[in-house]
Image (tube, rainbow, N blue to C red; front, side, top):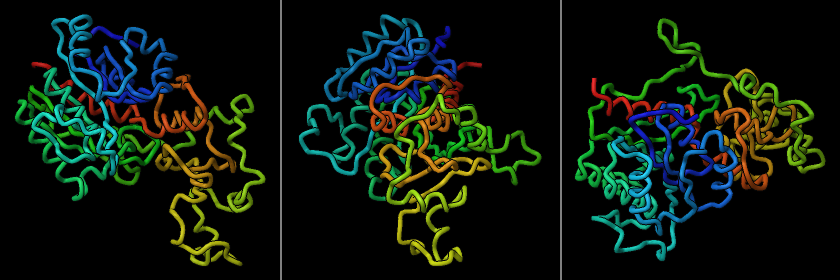
Length: 358
């Protein structure tokens, strides 16, 4: 999958490699990937056909000096433009001990932002030509306003133009409703207003060049056979197994309430999380694949079972045959935390475009 390119990427918080794959798809080879989870690192190593030329680094970014990336750039990317990509986990609460004062760099002095700060530390020290930063939508919530303001202040001071992109994976060919924000920076010039969307609501795309949203039945077709069976998919005998079977495809537990006209209601509408007993419909896109679902949190398959690993990966737009290392719980976390590659591809193409001189 590696290609010759005048632009290469350094990936931080690589996880299972969602944004890294996106970079390869955008024609920007990843020369370095790093994560502190050993299972994630093993996942990257398992996919040698993609990451065979990538230097894979296991470690906590708090403890990895920028010099490590500078050395890799010097070795693998002399005379090439570099971009930094990554989605720093932004936990609402962090232990104060993780906050390293001497690395703050004109800092974001909110301890919630310590990993964001490490991302910025690498960007300001290695001075790439551009960057793509991904995070959850709630980063724009007023309670996190200080993090975004300081982020912008630091990157502007370092000489970057930027755009904040609110994105839904559905609009980039991913069969999944998944809202994220991207902060995209460049030392070049943005050639357009926003990353190019490829898909839209089927009822609203007439007269455009957009394709209709991709339905989940299309992307997970072929994984229903016995050869893909996983013991963890079985729900029979569980507390709510019989209830799940009564939920129609595309609905959740509310189908079994008085709100839906269900005789002898089993639940009360709006008293449970919306994704309780949530079941996919093959004729619609999926809901968000989560990293750490409870035992009865969906989305479930319309065949009344939990999703299989290759199905979750396909819904995230990982390439078919992509391998994951670890227990079922670890793999679900890796897939659920990943940036969908097709979504990330649009963001990386956007920053790449800004660096190419016409």
